[in-house]
Length: 311
Image (cartoon, rainbow, N blue to C red; front, side):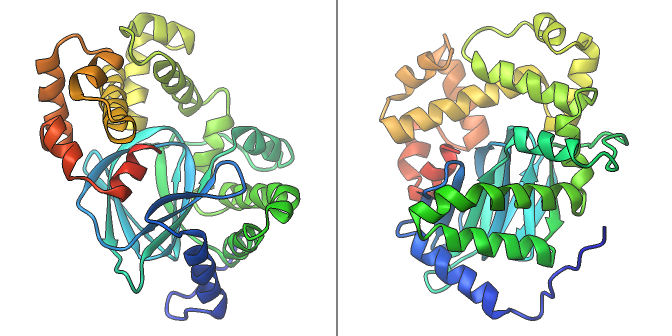
């Protein structure tokens, strides 16, 4: 299947209408929820500094502006002609690099529905899930006309709670289908291939997240996902750019940051809540990841940072 890609030199009336609707759906900076679970629209009126953030499995469509995501030195740029696919939970460093009050950064984020992907793959027996394993759990792809049309239809439905409840599931299904059959869709298919290492790593990530405050036993984790300890370490680092223990540390620090930003906890309470026994170790590792001690860093961030910390 060879879908056309939209022409970057010709901003259509449909693109302008998409931006207009996104503006209506984002009365405030940061994350704005919609009537459809798992679908949100994000707004920023200015560029941001590079910010560590935890990204859930999602399809991220920039409707206006431009964003940069970085994982282990690899840079992913995406704008209104591209979308970012995050197939597993990943700690990224992200930065909005094009936005101002007259043309704010606008992004539609759709949570990946793994059961929908599995059902679609069952109906596409000719699309093989075999092939080389992806190096990372994310990629950027160009939007086809078909994908763009589906996104426009979804945005129109978000105006009405009733319409969205009835019709949005079918449009979201189509968007997942376009991602699966589009550019680099092979990487997303691996998520539902039970024999693929990506699927095993996704399971390992889920197990770590479920009990991130507890001590992590690598042997037990490897056994739970039917891998050897060495294979788990190798493939985990290939997909996420870090070891399971490093990943757990990032989860702890991101959750502590969220607790301080959103719930108002002090650093000591947040550190204890996420499993740290040493306050000095927490402060040292927090500063290494976020660039400043907890009190100073949390006090300096704004609404958009709070939103990024919560996704």
